[in-house]
Length: 228
Image (cartoon, rainbow, N blue to C red):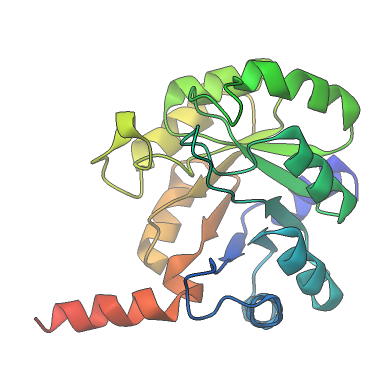
């Protein structure tokens, strides 16, 4: 699909994040593929997934657009979402429609800034849709200048500078939608259909829901905590 076709397909829709890290009970590419298939049957317009292995299995079952990331924890950087050019090339090779990258001002693995990494990737993958995972408004402005295709509120509340931010960050969604020229993807802390509707009232193009749909351990914990 072209960029225009992908954005048209996800407009006004729900993107479901299907991820499980190695320490989580559902960590399995097979399980994530079935989770993504279930999300599609439930009405998802796209899937967000982590790792080449999971994405490859998901794409065997699910014909929806995929937002791909590679999560890797490094000793020399707090950035763990698609931190290197190698990650981007691996995601592009497995056929994702959108590649999401950490677009904060933090140093990436190897002490590189986003400005060091992204311009060459933008040139190498001219037709790829790049999503900027942002923590604040300044991240979005920077991403737009660098040539990203869309911005997300993904990392609001997950960086040192934004710790304690109430989620979902509706004010950031609204400011992105009003002041940037790029499609906005709401992501982070959406727990209910009411919050999802509120995100769209902020003017976002699409919204990602993950934990509230695809992480039964956390969903169960939320209910169990209500009884304490």
